[in-house]
Image (cartoon, rainbow, N blue to C red; front, top):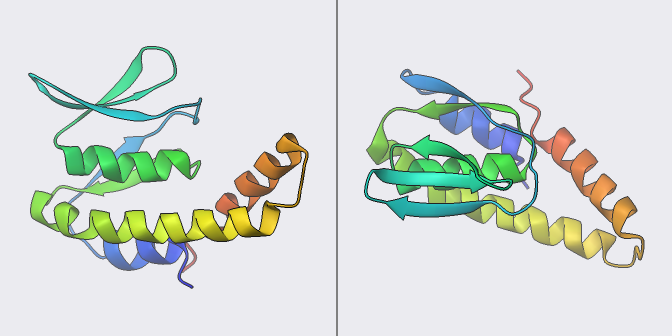
Amino acid sequence: MPTLGDFYREKILSQKDLVDQNLPANSGKIEIKQDLFGCKLFFGKKEFIECRSEDEARYLKVWMESGVREISVPKDEEYLKAIVPELEALKSKIDQVIHDYTFGILNRRIRERIRREVYQEITKVEE
């Protein structure tokens, strides 16, 4: 199964026009909300990141949930729109595998630590 690092190297770093985005540590629920001025990615109590589009917000949400703190975002909106469903599907499959393997671990802290460590490994971009 491809990892998020593989996806990033192949689909994102291959693009010419990228914008770097710093992401905060995942602090609970992450939500995407539309307003008059566009789309916002909310996290924490009242903190948010302004996004150009819902696709950008969905893209950043996947990486935030994965624990990534800095990511490059393609400027091409059409390209972003095309790859976001594939990225979300990949993350969903990975979440399911992690869940299946940690299901029997009763201690929530240990389960979360394992999940974080797995995501640290699979988000690495190796050349």
